[in-house]
Length: 87
Image 1 (tube, rainbow, N blue to C red):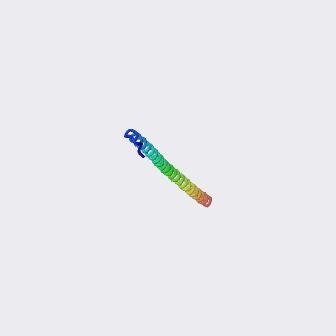
Image 2 (cartoon, one colour; image 1 turned 90 degrees about the vertical axis):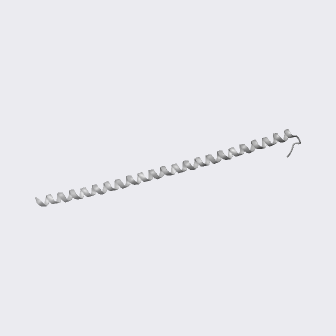
Image 3 (cartoon, rainbow, N blue to C red; image 1 turned 30 degrees about the vertical axis):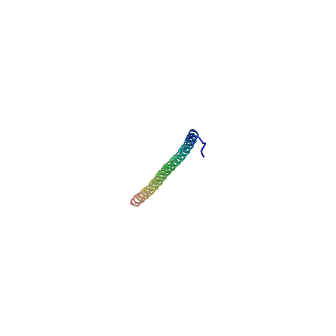
């Protein structure tokens, strides 16, 4: 819409451009925020995966330790039995 004067038209166009720039800046900020959120989520997922892996490793290590302890107990029991038989 024209105001009828060159100055009025330029001011109107300038205001329109300024509004458009502000809207574009807001869009860029929102997109940037979304990207940051996505990156944060990815990092959180990675950390969760690492923690899960660590927990799994701990569980496996504990399981091996228990199995080794049982095996030692069996060997000790056999040794005791052999000692008793030899007496």
